[in-house]
Amino acid sequence: MDRYVTEFAGLDNNREAGTGRQMRDLARGMVGRCLKYDDLTADY
Image 1 (cartoon, rainbow, N blue to C red):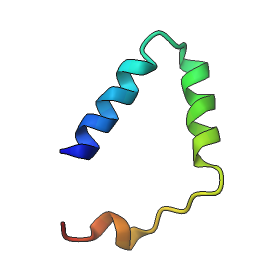
Image 2 (image 1 turned 30 degrees about the vertical axis):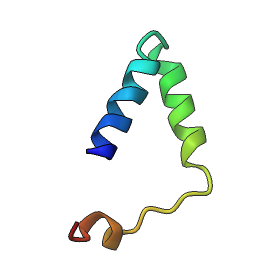
Image 3 (image 1 turned 180 degrees about the vertical axis):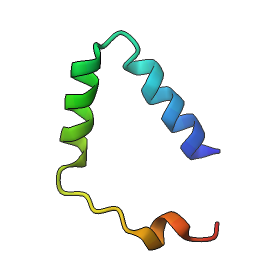
C-alpha cells in the first residue's frame, strides 16, 4: 500500500509539469541506482 500511495503522490505532485520536465526528472532520479531482476520478482 505504501508504494501505491507514494507513486500516486508523485504523479499528483508533477501533474502540471510538462512531459519533457517529467522525463528529465525521471532520468536524474535514476542516476546511481541499479534495479535488479531479483528485487522485482521477490515475494512480498
